[in-house]
Image (tube, rainbow, N blue to C red; front, side, top):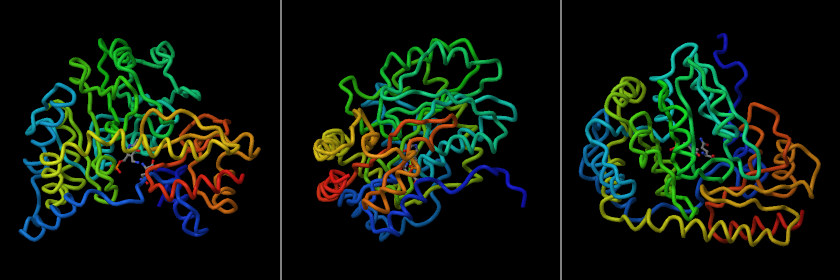
Length: 379
Ligand code: PMP
Ligand code: GLN
């Protein structure tokens, strides 16, 4: 058939994990933990399966899970979304992002995103007939210049896609960034899709700048999160989105014919976990900060320069003292010859990104981080 996405190949995550496997390299490329999620959560899944909770869940998600999410959201962000009308459970955050884009973007609509940007946004916009306008951010801070953003807004702008804590740069937005975004779009008919999958992996002293904290912006926003990140269960494929009822109603029209509903016993187990073990997400920043620091310290005597990581489970390193290769070639070389797989940054950018930066995932056991650091110190 004629391709609808002719320029698109297989995702970098699939490519690099396959290369890591082929060369038996330590895989710090695709973001996933090499340790298991909480025992209690796994036990609750087995329990609900054994109790026969094995038929379709309600289309929007089980009431137990939506109610638990509403309660947690109120506790953290001081805003209680309506569990019936505002919260939709999806197949990972990926489905939430897809249904939001599909429901909101029409042919010719402009969508603004900030590069480097996570790789699933642009193809969904393209399939919807939208036009991506990508604003390139620069290392090491990857800060948005709000005047430059304002210049990109036109009468055709329908949606802005934001992501904090940010994959792949590991930077975070301040509350003032959210306010500046709001000031620019307040009098326009523009929605905000806010990818907050790392909301609980934020090391910044002022905390995670969720759009849900902003009383006006949240009336126009779809906030997306993922249990894959929060509970170390990327393979369970459960995420959710929170949006005002009139927006959620539109997203649900797509969701009901894309997946209809998400695995019932998994939703019930997640609801139990949210209700019974709030300490898990409360302890997550310290848990991941220790891993970040361990990898960074392990690289202190290497020729790699470590950039600050304020959130996510990623660390950027600059390899310019090691090699003159471009980042894609360097990641291949590193996997094949040094036995460590990483992700090149340029693949997340539409414009040329000539910096010598690669992304390392530190959602790994200490032994894995130490072994990787030892290999990287030999470069
Ligand atoms: N957005 C970002 C920024 C991510 O890093 C990821 C996962 N790597 C996703 C969305 C997708 O999350 P999920 O696995 O829940 O679909
Ligand atoms: N989000 C993960 C990452 O950034 C990968 C997710 C995937 O492979 N789809 O590495």
